[in-house]
Image 1: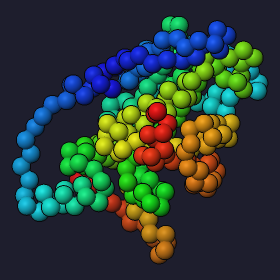
Image 2 (image 1 turned 60 degrees about the vertical axis):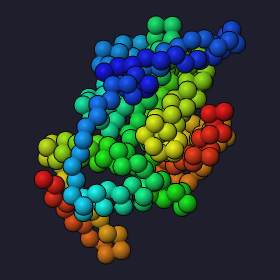
Image 3 (image 1 turned 90 degrees about the vertical axis):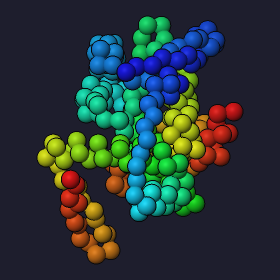
Image 4 (image 1 turned 180 degrees about the horizontal axis):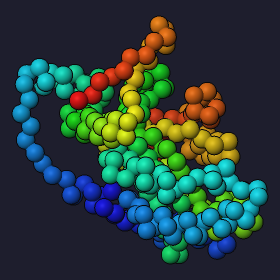
Length: 74
Length: 194
């Protein structure tokens, strides 16, 4: 695992004020660094994209109302 | 990409710790070796371990290229002594005080059939599960999850996670094949790694 740490690349990210605010809010709510939030986002995006590419569908379910809504991902 | 680091297993016959390699990023070639060495023993035992039917090739192929997953192996004596698949995204704590916080989820973990008390009359190595749990905790710490991990346990392993690992038992999960769900908090993780 230590080797992977050494292999990390650095990049500069330009965000709008609203995007930075969203990132900071998620960082505080999830008790994660901003870098960790973005890495989580990338992992989830890649995972969702891979499954949608296989023809699967992503749903949110509201147990109280017993309904499901499909999440459209770009 | 595959990294190796040194860990220790216990040779049960000699009662001694022996050096082993923790592999981060198990290759398909290594899975092929696992199939040829594990499967004949698992198939030969009618009263095998509960995980003996798991298809590690299928699991490896299902997560290939996905950065949310990591597959680890422990190699000792030129043979794979255990395998573990974890996910680092999409799982959150259920413990009420930590609800919604990210954790490393252990999707699958298995010891080689010759190390299993359920399968082998004279199991060769112990500490495989313990090393894997420690690996998941360290990964969780690296990811900024403070050591939080979670898993659904097969019935044969429940006592390992409850008593030996000191994880919190959150009861039977009806949505996950009625398996018992366990979580480890940052405090429990620190105690475990001591």
